[in-house]
Amino acid sequence: MTELLRDNEAGIVRAAQLLRDGALVAFGTETVYGLGADATNAAAVAGIFAAKGRPHFNPLICHYDSADAAFRDVVADTRARVLAAALWPGPLTLVLARRPLCPIALLTGAGLDTQAVRVPAHDVARALMRAVGRPVAGPSANVSGQVSPTTARHVLDGLDGRIAAVLDSGPCSVGVESTVLDLSGAEAVLLRPGGATVEEIEALIGPLVRGAAPGAALRGPGMLASHYAPTLPVRLNATTVAGDEALLAFGPPLPGAAALFQLSETGDIGQAAARLFEGLRALDRPSLRGIAVMPVPLSGLGLAIDDRLRRAATPR
Ligand code: TXA
Ligand code: MG
Image 1: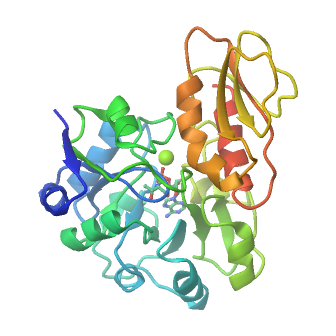
Image 2 (image 1 turned 45 degrees about the horizontal axis):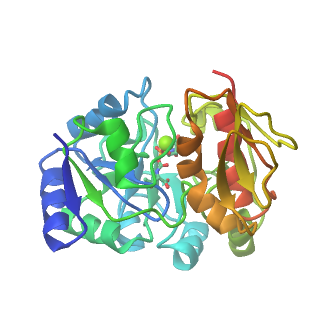
Image 3 (image 1 turned 60 degrees about the vertical axis):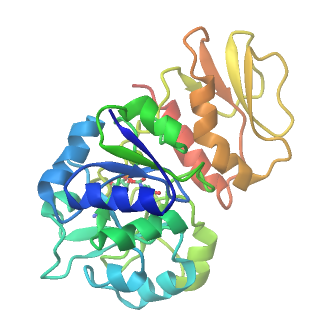
């Protein structure tokens, strides 16, 4: 049985104690729920891969309560410090070189000489990190290949009985995962668009190398084309919808769908991001033929939404 913990002092203390003992605890962040383990404990981290049913050791992000704590484990250059000062706590993950005495288990970074780090913009998550006093490894708290969870209920739908606890801090405000930026080399490489926009990052450190740069497949092994996927086939850029299809709408909905989930009536991209994974889950019903998706604008958070939708639409 997985314990459901409230986001009060007692819940945070209990979650921290479980994590320090090597157990798995899911926790809310501003992006999505993470499946936490003590990042310095390789056995605990191995438990993450087992619980998610992840076929490969895909490197995990470490979560911290402050940039100072993060930069004790990895080497931060000027770009990293500028970004951290402006965008942390927040939905940005930085891939940086491990320090020689970095205490993080190698399995956490899948054996790479880099480590992804981030400081989440969620008070409960940061209070948890403080209480644990160690970096907390955390992929999204979903079964491998399924959609990322944005509520404690979503976490339990996939992982009930497979993890020790979930710390319920309510629905996630951003709703898509963090932006992953590789700063381990001379070029700043965008490995995954996400909650921090390319526009705000580029305003701080200049142009990014985007998409599948040479070697990006290796540097971001989690960027498998099909990664965020409901069971039903997903059809992008729909301009019409069939009577046996569900519609994921953005703005005024197309007529005639068998089921409708509105990402944002008013075309608010932030609201759409926060509701995206909820919508993909809600429409994933066996009685329907597929999910038709209306287009979203490709700027700001729209880039991250479009990226997740393409993955959801990749045939498996
Ligand atoms: O918002 C988020 O980032 C959430 C919350 C829980 O923090 N976490 C999350 O983790 O989405 P996950 O494991 O589902 O995605 C992490 C991504 C993967 O694509 C992984 O391959 C990439 O980051 N990544 C992690 N460490 C890396 C590294 N050292 N080098 C390159 N890519 C890395
Ligand atoms: Mg994930």
